[in-house]
Length: 199
Image 1 (cartoon, helix red, strand yellow):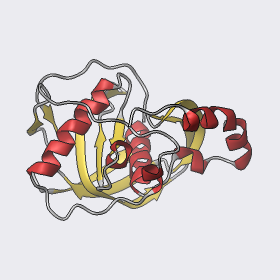
Image 2 (cartoon, rainbow, N blue to C red):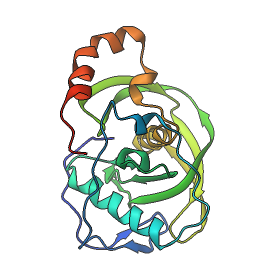
Image 3 (cartoon, helix red, strand yellow):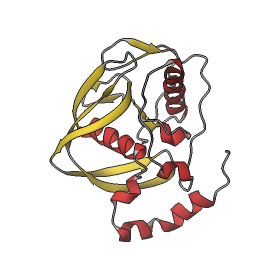
């Protein structure tokens, strides 16, 4: 999910617990998958064990997110990997600085309220739409240290978490808008679907 321009990070990133998790200096970005790629419509599989392979994938996903220049969230399905792993880095919101979040097997436990806000997606470039979602949520998952964590979120963090969890279930943000709005975006969606892809 894109939002703002950001500088690529070249030092160790941290998860919500503040522990160093990955070093991004020598990581090669992965190839993003775009609207029309069948992998975006598939349901990702749970990660049974967090191994060095999963840690490397998380590291590559973080670098891929930063390489976009404006990304704030990424799901493994968006780089063609059907594993339940999401990366979120919203940076600063309401004068609060958020650390990058790496979350395996995220699960939405509860939600409350309702709010409409504009969304976009790195896999559907240059397309945005107003999407109605719960305003506050509770999510559980596992971090890189294999620790279960619980996140109570609202605002932008809640929206990005929901957006990325949707990706793991093969759901895109355009699925959550009306048929009329989708028809208005049909030309742009067709352009993305028919564009020559690098994969």
